[in-house]
Image 1 (cartoon, one colour):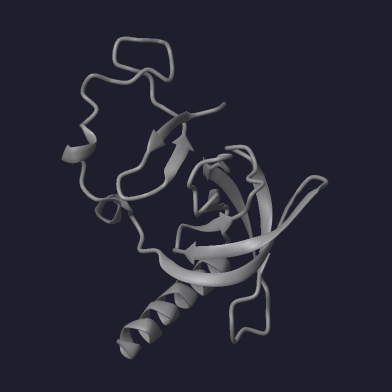
Image 2: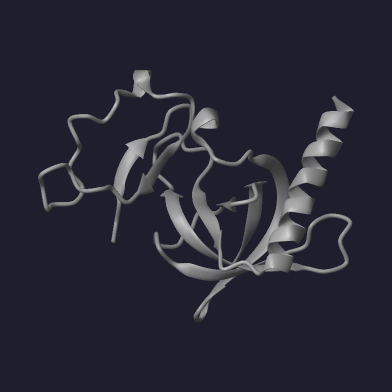
Length: 159
């Protein structure tokens, strides 16, 4: 199902599924109680996990589609993949990337949560897709948490 396109506070336009309006069976309607953009907290305060900026190559595979792109940020919940060819919202895919200093690739299943599409003749410096990790094993989740915490620690120590 395609979601509504909204301009995210302090960020690029993005897509995500809308919840039905109160008293309506239709999806995609704007609720009258939605806060105005100026009343919403900043995106950084709404996120449930801190994002860490990175530049890592990632292989994305779904069915017979292979996409080679770059991760531009990572958190314990997911990644942003910069690409001019984002996949459809809801697409499940296998992700493979090699964190710096690691001898083993990190392999996980993810699902496209939102898309920042390419807009012809428009200023869109960051096209791509937000991917949420799903069905991580306990071992994979612990490895991911260690990875994100280590990157954050090293960056904070440099400052």
